[in-house]
Amino acid sequence: MNTQISYQAASASFKAGHYTQALVTINRLLEINADARTYALLAKTLSQLGFKAEACKAYLAAAEKGGSNAGDHLVEAIKLNFELGNKEEALALSSRLQPKQCAQPDCAFVIASILFERDQYDLAAVFKNVLMKSDNLDHVLLGIRITASVWDIFKPADIEAAYNVLKRVPSDNRVRVLYLTFCREHNKYDSVERHQPIIEKALAAGDMDCLNAESPFFNVNWCGDERINQLAIGRTPPFNPQCTSVRRAMPHSWGEKIRIGYVSSDLFDQHATMKLIRRVLELHDRDRFEITLFCHTKPELLAFNSADRSAWGEIVTILDMNTKEVFEEIRRREIDILVDLKGHTHGSRLDIFNWPAAPIHVTWLGFPGSVNNVDLDYAIGDPTVLPMSSAPFYREKFCRLPDTYQPNDPLNRHLPQPVTRKQLGLPDDTFIFASFNAPRKISLPTINAWLKILKRTPGSAIAILHHSPESRSFIRKKLVEGGIAASRIFFMQKLDFQLHINRIPVFDLGLDTFPYNGHTTTSEQLWAGLPVLTVRGTNFASRVTESLLGAIGVPELVADTLDAYIDRAVHYFNSSEELKEFRARIEANRFISPLFDADRFRQHLETGYLTMVDRAKAGLEPDHIDVPALPPRTKPFLQR
Figure 1 (cartoon, rainbow, N blue to C red):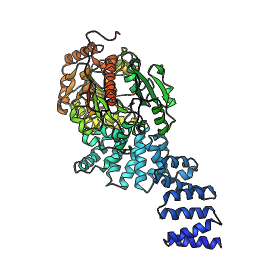
Figure 2 (cartoon, rainbow, N blue to C red):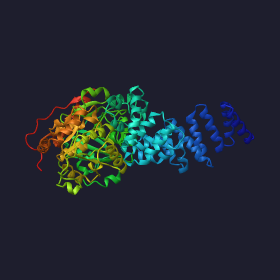
Figure 3 (tube, rainbow, N blue to C red):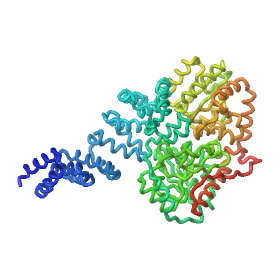
Figure 4 (cartoon, rainbow, N blue to C red):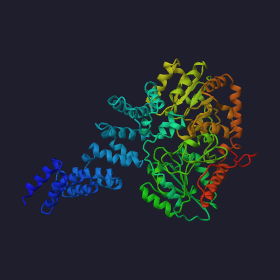
């Protein structure tokens, strides 16, 4: 047989669309000349005939033959594996590519998609520029979503890049939603004012497609509507509801003690989560509970830790484990209740919870809302943040603790040390409102409310925490254009925790943000004795401060409406005696009321866990749980 003629005949049949005839010729040809070119043509032919798994093998065979096109053949094998759902194989093969091959948009899309789905955002971010320059809109959207997922390294250039994409596809609201994410991060209110009404109009008309690209975390930063919150799915792949029944039916050996597993990337003492939960972990009743911490904290963050982490529980490092390996480790340890402490936040490992890892899956503390598209049984909250009217918008059943869902650590943090306004560069004779929340929480309705407050309180000032020069500039621009003198606006930088706590008491009134309240930020202000004014919310994220104020005994600081919030701020500006009374009550309640009573909280939490296990042992489906309250304390739980 003349191999050259046979190859040309096979190629001609392929080009003519006679794929079966081409396949017959190629198979004969492979018997005498199994070279890279022939295997590549075999792969193309098999793919056209619908035999994609076999086509993948043929591309790999072509790549193994070497030659100048070996990398291209490997790329095609990676793309086919991805299309077939063989993501582990696709990612493994990508390690054999040269950098220039990874930089091809099609290949970058596959690799980045897999990394993104695994929450490995920092690795996926390597490909974002390639994707955002692609002509394929799906590539561009992934590039923007990757950028939005590594919000700790947002850059001003990201706003411009997203806007350039929006100019290319001005009618695509998926791009508009992601562009707005960057604008809110840097408080670019002029763009929010232009583009947010377009999104709201689309949602009102029932066009929800734009939510498919938005992270649930960023959605709750601007939207207080639980119906819409549950539709934002962002990066989370859907799971098969049958996973739940399979998981609950799996054989499980219950022990004498309840085995609790906490999963988090924040397990170091400087993180906000640990400043809340640390004392509860230390106090867990070891006679009834075994505590395991499945830690995927990065080593560079652990370097900041000075606490004895063994006091929190047994540490199992899962940072470098894939999902299957983590699943097998959890099953080996026969964990009864697996608790997600991250939800839809940066660095989560929600993939673990879509495997049948434990009989009971719980979410708590990390994300203020339903962790949609994840196989979870319970969401831990309280009656304020999780009223039963919210149940239709949650897949999870509620486990409601009686005082507040948020624990606090009164032992491992110091009270504020005295500092003066002069030391902070602030005027002594001025009433100063303050906001310590992340700038992204200062929504357009929030900044507009503050404008009205400042206009009605002549001589007052406001101090605002900022994370970047851009956010500072845009916040100042908004307030100054609204008629507030720049001299009335002070900006605060992030400080080490104790220095931050020290400065809080010098201010007169904390102003909360909405629809995303201060969470740890609010409890820090209350710990330091500063009254915080909030407005009653409409979803979990917007009800948190109300929960915390109730738990320390100052529910009067919750306004029923936005107008009432503005009026109340003006009222307190004119009523310094009332603010002094609130300060006195907060300080008197600090070591009696539930907010900072870690042991009371621990007992309520453990009661919730016991109830979950009792139901599971009895073969009952999860159901809403209301944990009964312990009697109130009459003596301080801690002396300072």
